[in-house]
Length: 246
Figure 1: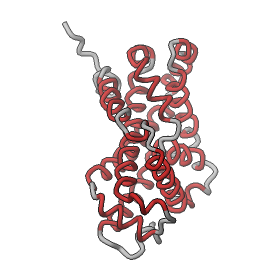
Figure 2: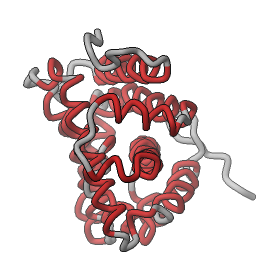
Figure 3: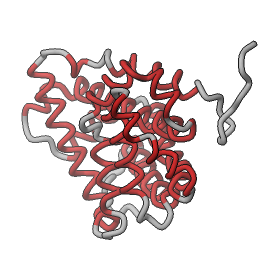
């Protein structure tokens, strides 16, 4: 008889695994894994543009020493997908072991973070295709905004923003739980021995940088609200979509 056990969050233990498998399939279908050097160069230029825009929008948050490591992790590892390939490769190879060894709540939070990162990668590739040759020259805000509107897909972008906001309560629950933290630390050596050190270190890094933040929920809700406002302005053809965002 199948088990009806659920995790502390009310989620079936394997639901995180199913979610991870689904998004990993999408990740490995991305064009960035190919050898199209022209497209890859354009994608890198686009990511650099978007990374700088995000840093400018959230400059006040990045200036706060308590928030800066958490925001940098969000911009580079979740939004930017930095070093995502080794983590994704490892998960695909060792996911059954990870699901058995790591706490359900930790895996559910990791699945959400990786889903946000992979969705961002998909949107970046789609925008790079839409902008095309325009990325071979310096791209101003007007050109970026035009490509953004040409691509459309506001549903996927709203989902991206929602996923980031949803990470807040999950991370807050973890970093306030001594029991869960102790359990996670205990499995460090077994996790490395089992062949998913990149995954473990990705999760561990996210928890460590978020711990000094007074409220991860409030922080990520603020980031999400700003990004939602910018998205709305872009689709509404606001003349200054990135200026004076509260």
